Image 1 (cartoon, rainbow, N blue to C red):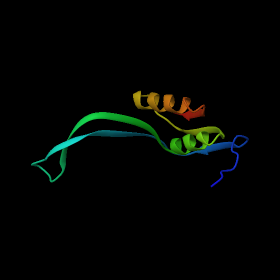
Image 2: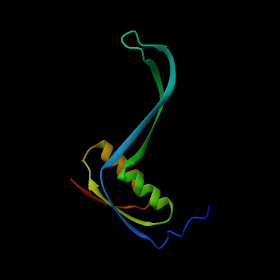
Image 3: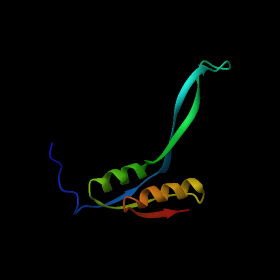
Length: 95
């Protein structure tokens, strides 16, 4: 499949901004309190979620992206902003 050229596209994305956090590790036993595995976390990864994920996808395709949304002023917001800056996304955050 051939994708269209997005390099001339200017995209404004407005929506809910999220930081998705994924933990990975092995499960060696089942919890006695509930029938769920007990995971020994050995790694984690943070990714843009919600409208921020859409912005990353559009920027990856080559679009010139501006992202508008509400964002806090905490460590998770800082991590999200850093992730978005690596994709040259123009972030306009309301607090």
